[in-house]
Length: 223
Image 1: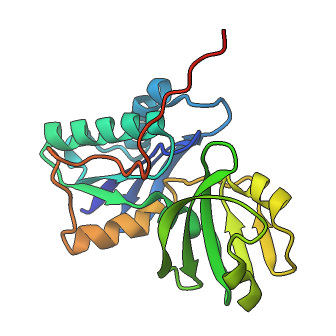
Image 2: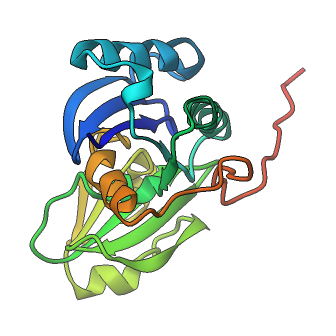
């Protein structure tokens, strides 16, 4: 039947979709209330299954947005995905979060910079061409006026993600196009996960870990 349950928890958007042969048949998400994943993720899973009237056993695979992103959000999402995959004996598929984000941009030329906010002036970013081929590795980088300048000087550069707000305050270039108020969503995961499912590009459930990109560093509370 090729029903795939897609979970996206890398940012404040708690997003769950159910897809059938790569097409969305149900989507539930909420980015309004900060990190609500612990309270809402399993509720949303039940909601999408109920809407389509299938049981958990009828899911063919579980797909998870693997990062980079929020440490807490990724841990919650990956734990849920691994638990479901193990309990249901279903394959686990991982999809890069920045790839998911880039697919929200439709352009005929130029490049897409998918970026997520890190601490201070840092972002996690990856760069894709207009056909969504990744043309630069995913990096954690500190922004300054010269960031992405090689791409900006060549043509239109579309910035998307919650790293856009501080980027547009730093980079002022006529080729910079800022797409605001966008977060990764399980909506764009559907076709990416289905492609991996068809070629059996799956993860080892026991050993799979989120792609944090950087080691976690706790911030001491102010006294």
